[in-house]
Length: 454
Ligand SMILES: Cc1cc2nc3c(=O)[nH]c(=O)nc-3n(C[C@H](O)[C@H](O)[C@H](O)COP(=O)(O)O)c2cc1C
Image 1 (cartoon, protein in one colour):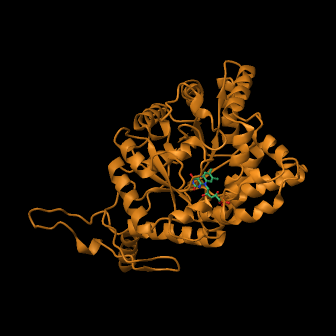
Image 2 (tube, rainbow, N blue to C red):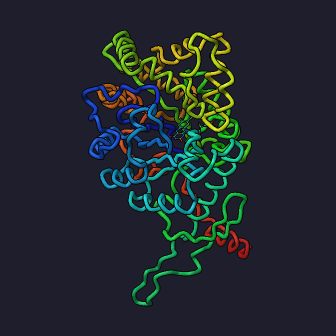
Image 3 (spheres, rainbow, N blue to C red):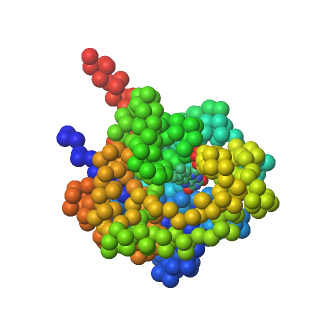
C-alpha cells in the first residue's frame, strides 16, 4: 500500500450563541438567538462543513454552569443526542462528542458511542475529557471533584474499558442464518471481565462492531497528566497554540511522549482550535479582527469568567487595584489547573493587578490567522509544513467569517493540495488516515493459528 500524502485536517467547533471569551457572539444578527439549542442551525453548520470537505464537527461540553457561564453553556444540546441527529443529515462528516470520564460509566459511554457508530456508518469520535468544572461533582452525588492524579488515572482506565467493550463482538459474530436458525456465533462474543482500580465491568457490550472498528479517540487536556493520557490513548489531540513556536513545542512534546510509549507518532493528529479573521486585504482583516474582538467582550464578563479555571472562584470579591490574588490558585487543583497557572504566571511576571490581568485577557489582540484569504492560507500552510499542527479546529463563530473561511480560504488550500477536494472514505478513520483497530480476540486467534502453522 502506498502511503497517503499528508494533508491538513479540518474540524468545525460550534459555539452557538457564544463560548468562553465571546459572551456577546449572539448579538450578531446572522446567528439565531437560540442557536445552541436549535437543531436546524446545527444541521446547517454540519451541511456547510461537509460541503467544504471538513473532516469533522466537534461538540464541546460540560456539566456545570453558573449565571456567569457563557451563553452557549447556559442552554445547549447534549452532544450525543445532537450528533445522532446530525448523523442522519450528513454522510461523510466526522461526529466528535466531548464526554467526561469523571461523571459517566464506561458501559454507558461505550454503548452510546457504538450506537452513534452504527447510526453514522462509522463516523463517530470521542473527545475524552476529565472535566475542569469542579462544580460538576455536585451534580453527580459527590462532595468534591477528583484531584488531578485520580481523574486522569480514572480517565485512562475508563477509555481502556470502553475499548475492551467495543471488542465484545468480532466482525463475524452474527451469521444471522435463517436456514440454520443461527443468529449468533457464541465463539465470537466475549465478556471483558475487567477488574480494575476504578471500574469493574463484566460485559459483553450489547452492540456489534462498526465499519471503522471503533470510534476515534480524541483527547484535550494540557497538564502533564493530560498530555500523558493523550500520548497513551489519543488518536487526535485538541489543543490551543498562540504561535508557531508554541505549536511546534506542543507537537514535539506530545508525539515524543507517544513514541516513547511505542506508538507511531504519525498516527496522532494534533489539532489546535483557532479563530480566523478574513478581509479583502490584510489591513481590512485586522480591522475586522479588532472590531469583532472588541464587540464580543467586556470587562465585567471577563472578570466573572476569570473564575472558571479556578473552579468558578469569584474574583469580584477582591480589590481590583491590588496585586492579582495568587492565593486563588489553590482552587484550581480541582479546576482547569493548567489554564489557571498560565493566568497566575502572566500576572506575576508582569506585576499585574487584578484589573490589569482582566484587561490584558480581554483586550483585543492580533491572532495568527487574520488577513486576506491568501494570507490566511499561507499562514495555515506554513504552520502545517513546519509541523506545528496536523489540522485545525475552526471556530464556527461569526457567520460572515465562517463563510469566508469555507468559500475563500479552503479553495486556495485545495488548489495547493494542502486539503482534500473529495472525501477519501465514508468513515472518520478513513478520512483521517487512521488505521482500523483490529479486534483483540480475532488478532489473538490469528496469531495462534499462524504459530500452529510454523
Ligand atoms: C482544546 C481543549 C478543549 C477542551 N474541551 C473541553 C470540553 O469541551 N469540556 C471539558 O469538560 N473540558 C474540556 N477541556 C478540558 C480538559 O478536559 C481538562 O479537564 C482541562 O483542560 C484541565 O486539565 P488540564 O490541566 O490537563 O488541561 C478542553 C481542553 C482543551 C485544551
